[in-house]
Length: 519
Image (cartoon, rainbow, N blue to C red; front, side, top):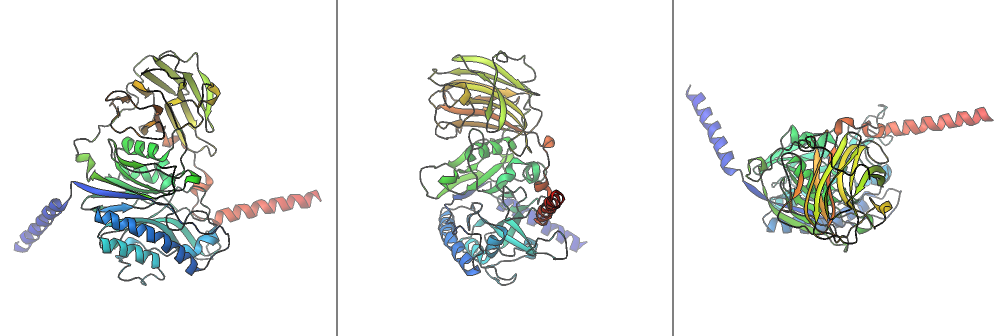
């Protein structure tokens, strides 16, 4: 009985200590990195050459990590592909890969660098975290040997994964995530299933995924909805696409729509339109960076709520169709016309007057807009609606309501990329009859800027401006993702490249047989 009481007291004391040590806020850092790229070759380089290039990039990351620690940051996120770049064949990337163990092995690479073979990159990253007492997320490549007798095993005898690693402030491997949603990354394999990776700290619960994964349900949405993470760490190599998918625009909208902190580190490459990093809270961006003028890296800092759900500024849940389904459609449908944004066919209607109320519909989605301009410049805006499978792949089901500036006064240019505007709006209210709970509110201003504190989402699903007139607007959008209507693809569902080789071999055999028959 005495022992039981003692154990209970110890447990209670431990909980008290954990509660006291928990931080209400933490300082976050993200670093946008201009990657030093390898020479363009399909021939594998030596392991020594690969390590030399990786260390040149880590030299730059080291300065950012030290700066973050000196500024009091508890965690720093570095970008996807930051250590070696992105243009590789399966064979060419192999010298850059290391075997990354499961974090359950309880490993500090800085102290025991040879425990899992040749791991100089992991050892250096671990030492950077340990020596600066800061959590570090980095993106590197993992290789896992497989049995060549297994038909699923790739020809080189290894699975290869695009991988995020996190080292804690003691240099210990705290988390490992293999990217699931690949984007034209033939050098890497798709894991058998999405990995749901989280780790706990004294400043909140964290989840991890990478780049293209933010457009899909798993693992991104599951981490927030089912695992209740407080903050997502998100390394990316994001190429900006107007009008909906610039990095700062969509990532800040995702944080607001999912009501979670999002720390984004993007690679920086102007020629590929890669820029846009940020620290985003559920109610508003804390810091962001977008630079298409220079080739320089950039570090960002912000104070963030450790447990945003406990914050008085935490936004309420939204019923995205509550308002739109209770009103009669405004005028506008009779004057609608078709136009394209990228490969997606929208229904548009023009904002003819300085102020008005408009509705435009497509399939199950009707979009309603009330607006008032401060003065109509010689610019054309349209209200657009799209509901369907998006883009060339036709995999993701989108529902989008958007007020967007046209490239010129010619209506045929509506939907084409444009990055400057002159027209200011005194008021706008955008809503839609969405069939999904996953809607992300976007407001993008002239010269690719966000509008923190200048708009809000009401509980009935209306996206409205606040605090007076806006800077000139490029687009105001409600970007919906209806995940259950997505189409699974073969490439997205396979777990290795062996299937690809099998398909190609089969096709070549069929062609050869056809040629024989023809002869």
